Length: 310
Image (cartoon, rainbow, N blue to C red):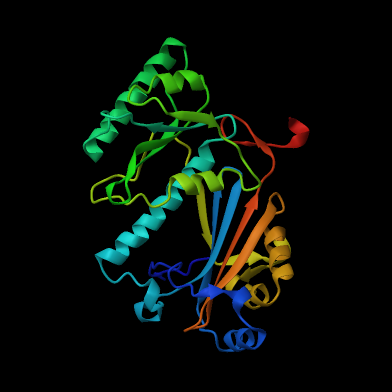
């Protein structure tokens, strides 16, 4: 539980990571564990769709204790952190709201139809969504559920195009035909792999060389929000007594099998896909990540369906 009155300072903990612990020799690992900086570790759990992400990292109450690489020093470092968070947010929103029943489109422009500015590109998409919703209304369908990302980089000669994730209630061919500004647009059904839609979500939300005042992505209203939970203690073995997250660090760093068994015990309804340990070689702090997946199906409202109930 968070101590009353304790204020932890936000920082870019990913920027504070040096290397994977797998690259560390055993002697150095033991030295780091014995001399590591004493701090409070937090476990952040992010549930989006069928994915559960776990991020374990140190938190600080004093700015001088924060690793230099992760400090929010100026507007530029704040912007970098905001960009990272925006990419994560959009990716998790995609994973929470879309499945194999939905579609992924890449809308391109033919010669002479390219937008002259970011504002024109967004206007084109606004008009496209309006046509989509008009057609859906005539068919008795609700308004489209969507997320789209606009990409253009004149320096790298990347032509204007839009990646669109949309619910699959309207026929794919109709969706393609309603885009009037290009003839090479493509659509396909979303395809989950072992990691669900994580790979696709990361691909379309990669850095778009966005300029000032250019919104990275846009979405329909009413999308479900993913859930984020931060705790500083976890039950040992999943059902034992609560133990501070800090107490798990030594075992998690030294023993991968024990780390993954404990994380799996915390969340028996999920299957562990991977886990990693990183470190900061200057102050001896560790950063642990894991990803798990719930293989149960979901209903239209995103609720899990147990195999026995389907």
